[in-house]
Amino acid sequence: MKNRQILVQAQLVNSLGDGVYLVTSAFYFARIVGLPATEIGLGLTLGWAVGTVAGVPLGHLADRRGPRGVAVLLALTTATAVGSFMFVRSFGLFVLVACLYGTAQTGLAAARQALLAGLIEPAQRTAVRALLQATLNGGLAVGAALGGLALHLDSRPAYLALFALDALSFLAAAALLLRLPAVPAVSSVAGPRLAVLRDRPYALVTLINAVLLFYMPLLSLIVPLWIATRTSAPTWMVSVLLLVNTGGVVLFQVRVARRVQNLRDASVSVRYAGLVMFAACAVFALSPYGWVFLLVAALLQVGSELLLAAGAWEISFGLAPDDRQGQYQAFFGTGVAVARMLGPVVLTTLVLGGGTLGWLLLGAAFATAGAAMAPAVRWALRERPVAQQGHA
Image (cartoon, rainbow, N blue to C red; front, side, top):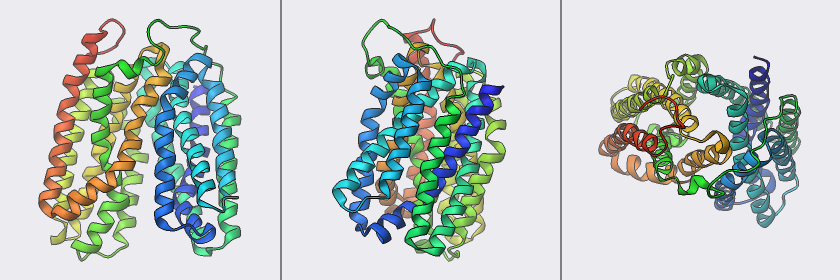
């Protein structure tokens, strides 16, 4: 119980800082640093791309050196990167710091997942991960509110103060993680060093999850543009939909995750997530005929998000060898980076360019991916049936 509380506390302080960063960073780089929007987008894309490539080696490092020490080191590195943003004055330096930030954040996520796997018994991992996700959303909401204050003031001191707060949040997280017991490092393992790169079934479930994660840019980018160009709804509806999403995750993620006890449950959860997301897309397509469709679609989307998260966590942990959780969690986490990098382009073209048909095609892609997860999990279990728990 103590370990769980510390993990939650570390997640909370991190998410407060992340909420501040997500809301203020683009405005800071544009208004204070003076970078053009194209350079900001390119620099952040490069940063996350480098982080994605570095994630698996850093996850492997967490396995071999112990996830607690690596997580602490990467939290300190993230704090350094955030602090360095305060001194950026050129595009070249911005790219370097963005790469450091993306690498540290990606590696930190993998190390913390490995730490969770080492400290929490397998039957409780998904439930604890759900608690951390609910905490994450609550912290992001508070951090976003603080970021809104800086946006209102729109001054250099306000932006710098919140960047300093973000850096301090990662220092606090590092201090909290040090209070956890050390998870023994894996001194040596049989097989290739980065075995996950040769694990085709795990690569397939990661790809399927990445497709399902394309829902991520919907509320932050696609739906706001859809509202502005295709509906008569007021712009403040965007905030309402985001509150519905955040509140739904905070209130119900743990409850939904409790129903996922094994890989069979996880596969069913992901299949339902795809179907519910198809329904959400279909209702979004109806939103030009009334605001109520936006609210119904947002409720369906958050329901799908809850189901997907619970199922994906169980699958990512359950199919990963215990002695390689770091590198496997890092690889599975690349789906988030792929969705962040490609999602805006793909969804903008499909939905805003295709209208109702585009929404339906997107929904069909979600439903198909959800249905494909169970066969992929069964394939993975056939490859290593003894080492895994549950049944697909």
